[in-house]
Length: 128
Image (cartoon, rainbow, N blue to C red):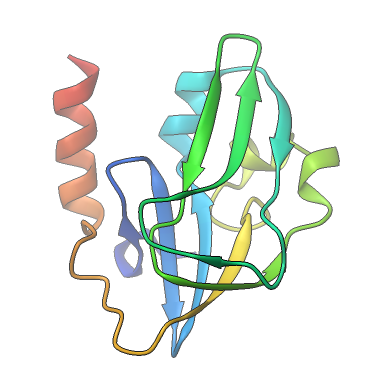
């Protein structure tokens, strides 16, 4: 996936919007910071989430981190193979490593999210 077409949350989720379907994952830099992933809890298909609310969890040998919905909408699909292939998150975070697809609620925009350059700058300030 072309990162320049993605939007990013401060909580390290990425969004690819196609019409009213948002594909969501976590960024490669977040996965790298977590290191050694051991568990991923996927959201429930059919459940509604508001932007900013937890929709899943990822655990590493170092820590457990909530995953936050970057958009408001209904989960319409999850990457069912991902929990058994956590290496996809580090090898292909923006492709095979997608986590869920949301049907975005009417009127929802991605204006609250950052573009790739904004996210890189934001990550730099956190890393130092």
